[in-house]
Image (cartoon, rainbow, N blue to C red):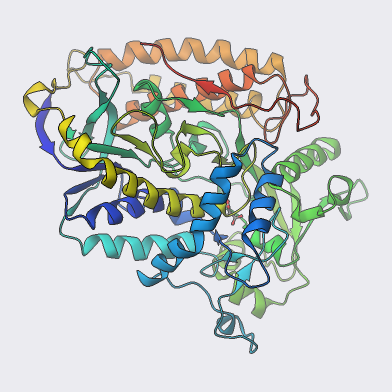
Length: 549
Ligand code: SIN
């Protein structure tokens, strides 16, 4: 398969969630030409599925210091405190811009509160000692995405390429050019036309979201295959803290519905986790694990649930919010209420069966707080990036905040450096065409399906909530073999979107395994039964992996 055309833009954004579109809109303010490449429809991204909301200090009862402290406490002493403060303090202005763009957050009056009815309602989630989460009912991400897409559509200098999947970045190191590594663009597969296009730009921003699909059970949509991290790694960027995979404690437990999130905001409104005892009755258990009980930070809650399920032999635990009546639940959680009803559970009358599932990557491509990777022209924002905000365990609803603030900051950084970046651009005539394999169609699609399933299953079994050195070593042996097979297969045959995604999840799986193996302690989300949790103050460092050329 060969490149069919070369397209030149000033800026290329890969991904169309909050981080990518926030960057695109700010870059477009300069009047320069921005391309947004996204592998499905524009709104098919992790942002759309965010339920809880966006953590931001907006109440006079709250303060930046308290939000910073809650973030650090959740993060297992691995957060970058300076980055945390910068992002937290930039929150209110960035959220105001989101509201000005047309995002409608829920006001207290809409929930039936007569007092302060005109003020925004503030939710609470695990690890937050204050109510500080702005939300749009229980479909916050979808509402934000709606407003951003509408704003992008109005900008004539933003061109959106849907059903275009990025294959690889074009960097000088891979072209064997001398000097410092720098980024020139990306090879992109136009899935509908079945051709590969070369995109060249002065800046490239990876905003590809998370890696949930690396695991068998996840709250993430199908698009979350870790393509940003995998491409960043192959391009020579530093990859940090991949062992910190956050498992959301409460995904609806239902045979046909394995990824529907039951927002932590329910626990913010008083829902309590319970486990079924031998006598068939439901018992609270979180008091054994943390003083904040059901509202403890996510790493603690997910591990506690895992432990209770194993101890009791039950396949799920339960979330009980029956203290609220149906009318109140329908107002505050309309989407979750309906979905549970469809699954046969009336949450006003009975507890909701839930299990943990892979939810969020706290590591990613190492960047500064402006999303810069250290490679001229290459940025990573949102879940693909690792600014140091989340440390070893993300505080709930800090991710939309980071996506919004860092997306904007990256655009500012690119603006400042634009003249220099423009001079470093690669001329179209110097960009080698993409060429892979022998351009014959493969009749062995079963290889893709098999490897895909195998990776996701052993990642769940061996590199999940509960890890041991033996399990990690087992996973390492498997992934080495599969990666070798994929690399051979990948170069032998025609490139398809499935193959690109398989290659990416395999790369990300290996990064997660290698990072986990190199952390000789339990910390935050990384629990390895062979190493105890230690005093969290002791020699805390990031895990960094960088490809050698
Ligand atoms: C949730 O609503 O529980 C998810 C929020 C988050 O992951 O921050």
